[in-house]
Length: 330
Image (cartoon, rainbow, N blue to C red):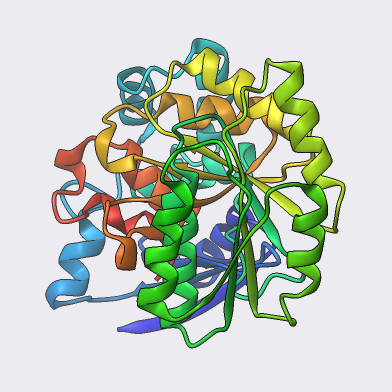
């Protein structure tokens, strides 16, 4: 087996390198997007045996590259409720790969990469992050998952609870903080939030849990702006899968106007159609960051890349060995 690692600024550029150096029969073994957006692909040419071959072949259906992935991709877009305008954009992007003898997942991934942005949260952000989003999106649970992931990686974590509206929200964070022995502070107002952030003592990861915001209600927007103004925070949108595509696009666009650059998708395990995910990312230009794939706090948040998203969108029978949790960078 001839195994090579390729790197470039986008999936399309990486795939061009793979085809040039390994040929059209190359098999993609893994992809990874670095925090700076650089894409790395591990590809193999020649005979690939065992479980690795079986897993990779799942993305192509019968284990071989397809002559024309467009009909399969078109059916997947329709099945997920992607509107015609966005569907046409993705199909046009995939058209360049229709005769490249690559798997459907990789051809679809190249199209997604050319139309959407992917930017997983770094392990150690250079500024505190504040999770924002509509009520019930799963912000507090996502805070818990981010904190648990960082703690298990050996990083220092500080959590600040600024959600003084939802009953029981801070108590939920207290239970997590006690279990993981991580720092937790409560901020009742913008000034307390400023003090809490200043006292975080340079933790590797500082996470602020904010209150649920109706992005179409001016009072909610004004309150959120007051919190965001107290420090150099990165607001990260938390939005659930399974919404109406138009609603998702409008919600994401509203939060993008407040300074969000990334979106974490929750409830991926409870949804079966993901057109709203594509609509939100495309309309708002937010980067897809991480996805929540299970209710398990310790193992429920994964980074998203174009190949993972493509496999998630394609029919299950094309990759029976690829579970939804493989939407992450490993």
